[in-house]
Image 1: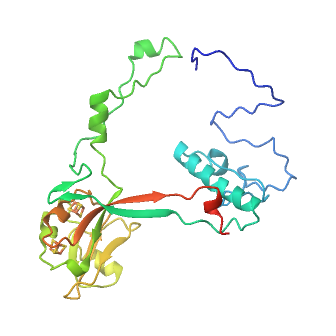
Image 2: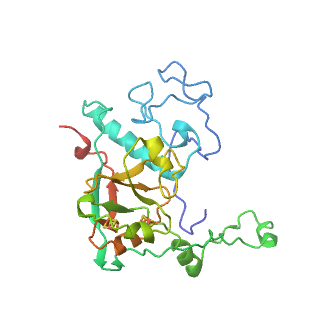
Image 3: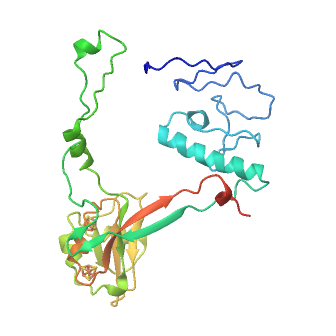
Length: 266
Ligand code: SF4
Ligand code: SF4
């Protein structure tokens, strides 16, 4: 991509061109100690990113095939932690815990420090350059990107998944006001039971079996609060309606520990 800046020349012996099209490792000798699977991909530990040769690590598409850039960056961080620990004589399988915090977003009775309005808009298409122009010149960028207005509308579709509904059963008086107002019917107060049975007794059956139910206990009647996290819009209406403050909307911050002194156990 021309930037208008002068070219830079970097002397080197070999250049490996990585264009993200296909994984191919014919240039790694098969007797160096790295095991490959039947598709010619290196065998990589998904937790440590370590190959069967302890001082060689893989990440990104080279580790598990095509994924996106977010995965590649995450792999890079995990591999960096492993390399740091290996260099300091530590067990690479002993992973450092992440930093996590939950902070209330309440600013007033009906006010939150995040935008809790729900948008029902469908996804906005990214505008494309006219095909008659795009087909004439291979260097023409086809995707034009959002303008300010479209970008704003698309951002408004955010479901605020970083804002959690936090329930305190000791404060709950089981008035059912949150159940009434929830637009997704995802809150149920009921008798406890096995998960399989419980799922059939919820206001709206929690059909995504891979998603855990959120259970709150400590209720005075001995019942439980069961919530289907899969369909929650994080709109905060339950917390606005609750007369006792048993619901709160709290921002969840997850911070990975990165390579360096903090990732070591000593
Ligand atoms: S945040 Fe909204 S959708 Fe989620 S449980 Fe509360 S009222 Fe229901
Ligand atoms: S609105 Fe509050 S007090 Fe009433 S049932 Fe829901 S959590 Fe409990």
